[in-house]
Amino acid sequence: MRSQHFGLTRYLVLGIILALPVATAADAGKRDWFGDWRMNHDGHAGTLRIRELKADCAAPEWCDMNLSYVDAQGVVRTGAILRIDDRGQHMAFQINFPNNAQKFDAYIFSWQKQYLAGTTRWGGRTFGFFAMK
Image (cartoon, rainbow, N blue to C red):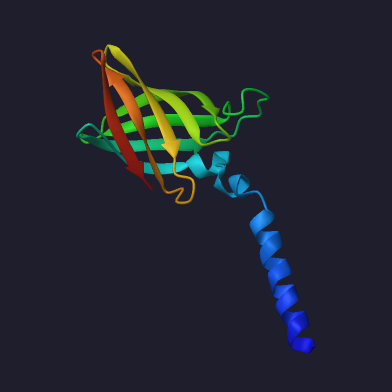
C-alpha cells in the first residue's frame, strides 16, 4: 500500500508540473536585457551596452533603460530603445551611426537568456545579427 501511495504522489506531482504554464518561464524581464553584449551585425563586431538608469519614470516600461554601442575601434555610439514587447522577448532599438540611425529587431533566447539574435536594415537590405553576454 505504501509503495502505491508513493507512486500516486509522484504522478500527481509530475502532472502538476506539466500543467504549469511553460510560457511564463520563457518570458523575459527587463533585467535579462541588462549587461554588455558582444555583438556581430553582418561582420561588424562591437559591444551593445544596456544599462539601468537611476531615473524615476512612469512610462514607457523601458524609460529607465539606456542603450549604447561601442565599435571595434572603441568609438561609442548613442542609441535608443524604441519598444519592448512580445512578453519581454523582443526589443526594437536603434544605434546612431554617422548619417544613419540604424534600427535593429532583437529577440532574446527563451531558455538561454545570455543570447539574442535578430535583424537590422541598412541601405534597403536586411542583415542578421547576434549577441551574447
